[in-house]
Length: 379
Image (cartoon, rainbow, N blue to C red; front, side, top):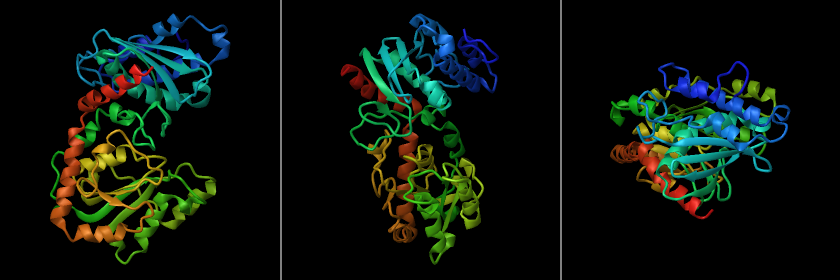
């Protein structure tokens, strides 16, 4: 077992099923330490027997206990085992998974820990319930690649892709939050649109693709644009987190620009009549989903990179969202159009909410299974 102060995987498994509030953090920390161990050459020496890693994390998420914080479908995982191994020559962000009835073997690249084990451990632990679900219900045995990075590539199962034909899965945020359960609960009793603030709201970080300095970031351009129009009171758009900046001086410049504001809890987004969604590094991930849940019509800025998530085939322009050009040139005109048609705005917001409500964790887990089986069948 792993030595040191952090719990072993078995200890984390046992702790995970208690009522302790930090059980998910303990599991993640244990997986992180396992990844550290895997890539520590001083401990590895000769490659250990694969059974070592099977014993290390085997059965770490058998979701058959009502107290589990990661339930996909209760009692669905009886007799499912999740086993870990390692290999060399791969890509740190990509894991190889072998699935057969009741078993999942997850192979991590040996360089994972030295490159991004923190990022990997969180996303991997978040995805374990869904991986166990696939192992429990698949009728096909085989193997597949899963890309845990922001943007997938090729034939690896991914969270976000720039090709509509690429295989995609519900992302780790959706799985770990049980389909954004907190937002669903917060938005159970929403006021009608005419009782909400008559503004379009956006908050987010300085992520995204830049073509120059920070002013070229699409999210920054959005905040600048809505402050320069004749009616800036129609919009409430601001940056809440400064990240991925080229130089520390950029943070001071952004603060002085007046484009920043405090974060707003997700529960308060439902107070606004309109929502805006815009890409970060790829899609906004929980951003769009939670905005759809709010029941407010969503102005979705077109993705310059064509980024998509697993459910985007169910999005329909002017039915459950309002399309806006990636250069923002038509944002104001479309806002005025919707602003003058409250019944249409209500209908679009209602359709978006119905779509989001229909995408439960259990439903999307079942929908993902044929995609996974297609990949396994081709292996």
